[in-house]
Length: 235
Image (tube, rainbow, N blue to C red):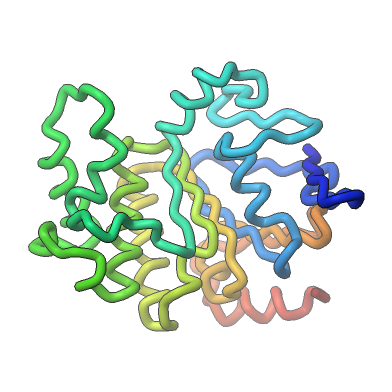
């Protein structure tokens, strides 16, 4: 798939004939320098943008051929987590989590589900807290709970630990791995952090919008060994 953007009289090639396959239930890290196409890749997979050429299939559905209405329905089955938490400052943690459900009728209690998800991410008892009263790591946990509220088959995380410290980074990554195991969802995480990447099943490196190389992480392999293999690859 390819994606280009016009900037004045110039054309920026964000994705250049990218071919990528991620197994169902896997955790895949996408690495690369700023401007390599990481965010654009997540945006087109999440149907927040459309490629200029190529086909994207998620769970056997060709999302590039969906109507605008069908794309909206598809996006409800995708969870998004961003570097900037995008929480609504005036809403409590619980209200932020259930916000995506409010326009829709559901067969379950929205707020009960929100409480269950906050408990799942380690925030039981913080339902009434405002974002301003929470640490960066806690705010990102709220954002992860919100991303799970529609029971996504795919979770897309764009630099999810970019605004937290190293200890919180490790905790958030462990949380994502546990949630993947519990829910069986596929996770694609764009990151600059080699330690985050080393905890994934697979690492894909982008450079100038193209897949430069891929590293498969052996089950049980120590993060230090994965980091060493990553370091051997020229940037």
